[in-house]
Length: 164
Image (cartoon, rainbow, N blue to C red):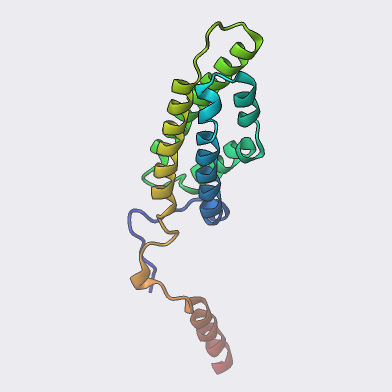
């Protein structure tokens, strides 16, 4: 009996698929960390926003996002994952540019709060798309899944060898 797969059966790298849940938790923590910069952004405290963007909570954001993208590499949300992460990176770079320019006084009157809000919104969208992508199982057709199939196959070939 062959195993049937549905159209949403993911062939993504198993390691990344398994690592998707911890990576998703990290992304959600990063959203909270960005939201905590709200006070500093509203005060246009450039140095504090720059320090916050380089905090340990945000350090591995790109790595965890790539785990989620690779984990959903062949799922229906692949393009949405890639596009929503690209949108977030663009907003994060914009926020970083504004904060750096304001700190160095190369950008006069840089207003950080709208840029931070947009950054949080884009990361939230990425998180929602990633959550949908992480829900797609490695094997979606559970009706035909037999965890002992390898054993039964192995035993039947052994039985054939013994009967000779």
